[in-house]
Image (cartoon, rainbow, N blue to C red):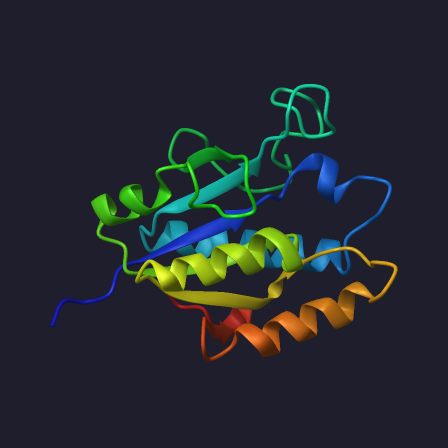
Length: 177
């Protein structure tokens, strides 16, 4: 039986989402955890992919705008890591991500980033549907409060709902690649 090969997928850790008017829950802790995952992945030769949500021209996340750029605080290396744009909540739809992962021989996908209830949730579910074994890093994804729920409750709910049927749920310290 072949050894599973992992990749790290970072979802929408962009300036406009992270440093906007509404701040993400535990943002600095999540950013620190993602950077720990990046360092661990890099030390083990694990591919690192970072998705960037791209909105239509004139929108807050229009291509090339300040808000659209990935956080400079992320310890990504554009010469080594795979950075790609997406236009939907799924990191897979219209991006070629599934084919790229298959070409790399990836079978396990470790997922972290923003926003929990949209792009993180969707990408976890689609990854599982496409036959990848997704791991959601419980303490490395975040979102903002909504009128109905606090961000902390949204994160806890998604960790609970996704764990088992869709993802393996681990904390940052448990991810070994």
